[in-house]
Image (tube, rainbow, N blue to C red; front, side, top):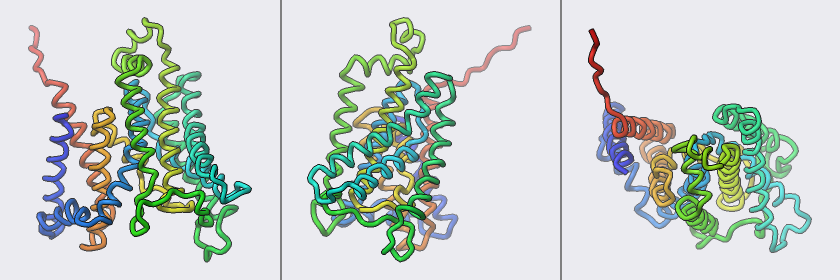
Length: 339
């Protein structure tokens, strides 16, 4: 766990220099970015609310990453899961049915898995690069969402805004307190963390997935097919992302819009690596990444800084994480010249 700590410290140092270059007091700005957002119950609830989808998606992605199956398209899978769940919520015949929310949960998971099944099939059957396919499918999902909210699903009473009608009360998670947005969807994330820990650390299939990533030849010799790892890894990530999309629709938003995700699918990749692909490490990584989202909003409102600071901090953190890994796991060695 040395690399995440080193990367976090270096990110804070570079962030301080960045703020100083922009003409802001580094200590004041860092306090506004990382501490002030947590000074109230509303800030704490928003922190947990934003951490929930990040942790959930990262848990699903980590299953595949352990087997060297690189799902970079969780953002698209989240969007498709949100579309599927919202479709059920909008068009189910009985909008007050008690089974509506479970049906939306299943629709979200199936939507994300279906979107992830495309690169899984192409990788397993045609040996295509899942990194490129999952990434390109994200753009298709974004365009599909845009078409729906600007066209057939747009709320006719929504003053021409690109958004659907609000979901019924039966299609939404109950908030813990109506003064805050934190709701029961966080329990899905708690269960996902536990299930990921069981699968990766306590199951034989999870062990074989890890072996497939660390020693592919040994896994093949032991009879574990590479295609199985591909399917399991991508479908797990797709299901987690789809459920996260459903939780956004049925939770704080209550409707579908182009801003359904501020980039949770991409940020969750960083969360998975900060957590070292470990369930409980991912929880810590998700809380840190959530604070970056929350801090970016805080300094934008209070100090007038750009919202792009969140992505800048994410990029700096990822850069230092990869650099720290390189210098920890690899050594530069001089090779003597031969006469």
